[in-house]
Length: 290
Image 1: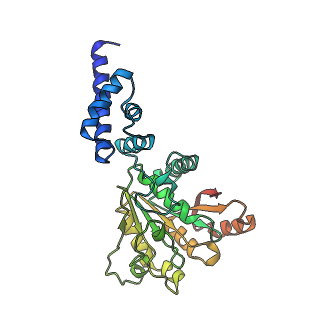
Image 2: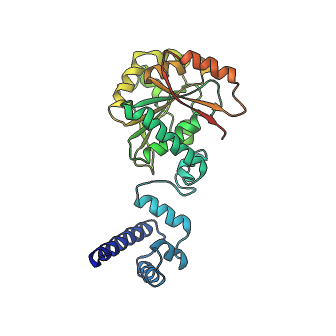
């Protein structure tokens, strides 16, 4: 390697170390005086900046992982930050096998659906308690980590959970917007700590959820939001409670089907799949075991 190339590589390494040190200072892990100590240790021991900080006892592995994630625009949260629901493994445990599976699913959905020009996708299941909320919430996080403007919509109007998982208000939400009580305004919540993630909660439980979802207003709302966001994931009600899931899948054009291992009868999945045929494309299916 030529001398100019060596100098260029050294410059990059110093720049990366400086950026990492700055992020660690911003998070309160290091003080300004610590940076010089870490740089000296890194040079003497031929260590990376993060490894040197750990060796000196100034930071731990989780501090370095979190700072690196911020440096490379891959946001995730330390335990306790945000006080969100424990279901959000993509936020709190991003380097686990479970989240690797979510990222693999994200890639397949990008290739099969979103890269083809679609914006919205319904998350559906044949029965309750199959893991739709869990899957939709974590998928929304991993899509937002790509830098895509990601919107999560809770259309399970009578048994909504997403507002509880993300610790936000459930009102006014989707249901009053469907009956024109919000003056055309959609109160979409920006999810704190995630740069590219928003949530439209379900709102107050209506007595007629299927009729509301079948209204033209739902299509109008979806068209409006599709012009503002790159990815829209909609949690539908379970198929066993009526035709709401089919209506949402039809509006989106596609559906991601969720079933729960050792819980969902295969006959129910087959029957629900038959109901979806002709209304929406089943983009993929997930056998949930969490």
